[in-house]
Structures are given as C-alpha cells and as structure tokens.
Length: 198
Ligand code: FES
Image (cartoon, rainbow, N blue to C red; front, top):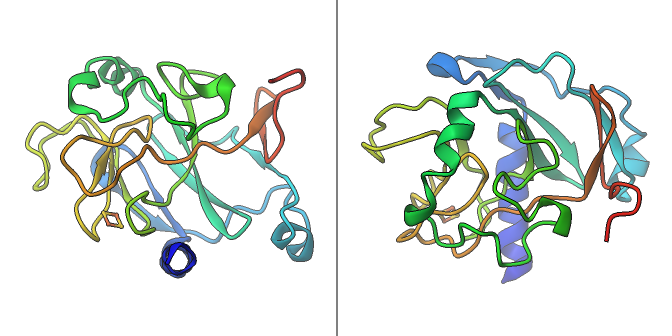
C-alpha cells in the first residue's frame, strides 16, 4: 500500500515536474528541469546528492528539482510569508515539527537552515499526490484566510509556507525536509547534512 502511494506520487510528479510558479500573481511558466551541476541520471537514480544553483530564484518564487525520483521544491520565502509563519500555529497539526519529518537542524520555526529558504519533498503525506504552490497571501477558493503555502488537489490537504500540515485535513504529517546544506551563498547540496550536524 505504501509503495503504491509513493508510486502514485511519483507518477504525478513526472507530469508536474516542469512547472515553476512565481509567488506574485501565480504566474505559471513551463520550463525544463533545472540541471545545474546535476550528476548523471544513473548516479541520481542511485540516490547521489545533487547540487543546485539558487542564485537566480527570486523572492517569492518556487523552483522544483528532482532527487531520488522525488520532487524537491525550493522556495525563496518573502518577508511577508515568513511573518505569517509564526501566526499559523493554531491552525496546524504539528506546528513545532515534533514528528521526525525533518533533520534535527531544521526542527525550528521555519523548518530550514536559513529562514528565507524552504527546501522540502513536495509529496503529500496523505496518499502521495504532489501539492500545488499557492504563494500569494490572499483568499483562495479552498481557504478564505489563506496565508500562502501548498494545496493538495487530490483530497484538499493544505500546508503552510513551511510545509506544515493544517488541522482537519486528510494528510497526517508535515511534508518531509530532506538532508541538505549550503555549499556557499548560492548553492545548496541536497542529500548531504551540514558538516558536524547530528
Ligand atoms: S493525497 Fe494529498 S490530500 Fe490526499
């Protein structure tokens, strides 16, 4: 059952993996996979780390990469999106990230190493669909009090701008933050913990 769910998510990912969505105005632009410093396909499928260039990701923008056949989303969160993170706690199932859905070094208020950079595996923790990015802070048909985040179209689960799941939706857990670290100010390596991390 679990494998079936994961495969379902992967299938959906393959059809959705070329979308980049800007925060403002939900501009959807079809672009190919970003392939900066990607290892060979064989190495990638074996789970090799990937290093990605985040230097051109604008504030509010989300970009998607593939790692271990999973969609890795990287979002450059705006100050407004960050401001609302702290106010969302009453609406969230696990606001303090107590469940082990992230490395220890991301068990914090922003679920990240640097506050503005959100890095996570965009697979819904209900049945493995790929939630869509709705970065604008404005009423949405699925939530009149929306403060930005992710919405899963399969069964209407919602997540905030730290990929934390809302209460009262089918998904039981926050989405997963993979191991990663900053190689320098504009490059992130996914699949490897920071030096000295426990
Ligand atoms: S798979 Fe996302 S809500 Fe069911």
